[in-house]
Length: 102
Image 1 (cartoon, rainbow, N blue to C red):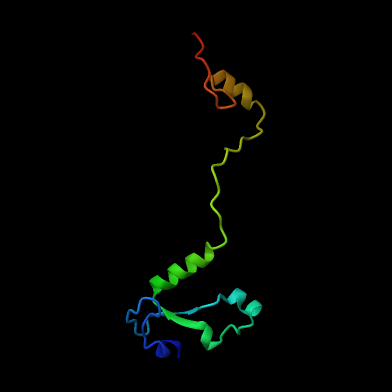
Image 2 (spheres, rainbow, N blue to C red; image 1 turned 120 degrees about the vertical axis):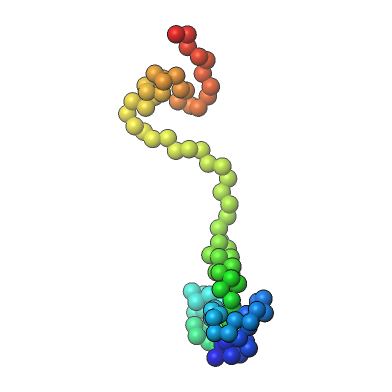
């Protein structure tokens, strides 16, 4: 029914799909109850090509994410780590050390 209503074309890019398209929820299913729309309400369904459907789904999935800044590496609390790093000539604080004479 949704494909027929859309004349078998993607409702975003207008590409002819025949029956190879995807039926997608305009308002995501998880939010339908909160908004007061039935999950299978025909007015909440749209016909999309797989490319447009994937782009829309990915945008919804990442909508609430924020980019994190640079993170400091997490150092383990392994016993003897500092002694090993000192013996190898590596500073435990990642600051350059002077080379030791042989």
